[in-house]
Length: 344
Ligand code: ASP
Image (tube, rainbow, N blue to C red):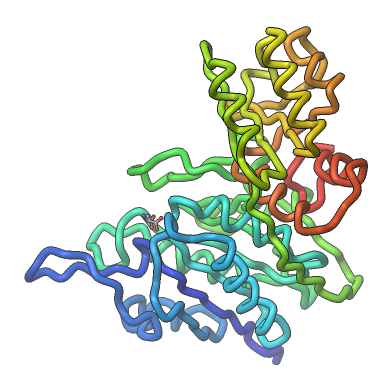
């Protein structure tokens, strides 16, 4: 008989770990080591489960790159002992966190599944149970003795997505996330349907896990809006130590062709700031140079964000800035899929 998969649940905070105090009506964090008491169904899964919890669980709005490193270190430290990982965070910034973790691990050959919930685990109508149980089940799924998922995923409301393709789209519906530019990796119905051709898998080749934890958050996001003034765009030039600017443009990567706008962008680039063009649209891709309104950006050497989400552009920028790359390497790596986060 083969050994049961061993899954580590990492609890960092967020709504999922809350219970309602029915006397006061307030939500409070509960002791996550007692998770099997709250969800006895977990004991029926064909795997063993251990839990580890942040000493002080936090709302995901308070997560910063130090916490990203803490999460990644827990995974790295336990990588050989466990067959899969389920990471519970608040959903608000889950797409940012999970994207960052996807870049920090190269040659990942085990599942790292992020999940959370819209209603606390102690609420009668909670979505936490299904999200957690199915995430554990996916993390424990294998074929030919190898984990089926060998990448960082995000599971919510019957779908597992590639984490670095997701965006939170609803503050109240159970279906809180979407992935407009990449289909779900797994759909949960009566059966778990794995979408095999879409998965990142290093089949058969055992490669050593590379863990990189240098992230640089000297970056900014600038969302264009009709009527944006030179004063506003120029003010970003004054940010001390700024190394990367994510420019959220319109449609297929379009921006004003006004002279002042292109001149300010040129000043960023001459200062050595990496400028990436990402679309404000929820789906679809930047096509640099497709319209006249983006050819100026292309000529300036702006990096093509293609179909990357803003969340993942933020994570990828922080990751690549930590890597000591030349200008050419930085642009090339940004425009290439490193973890399946961007089209070829
Ligand atoms: N504010 C919470 C958080 O992101 C919401 C949630 O857990 O879904 O931490």
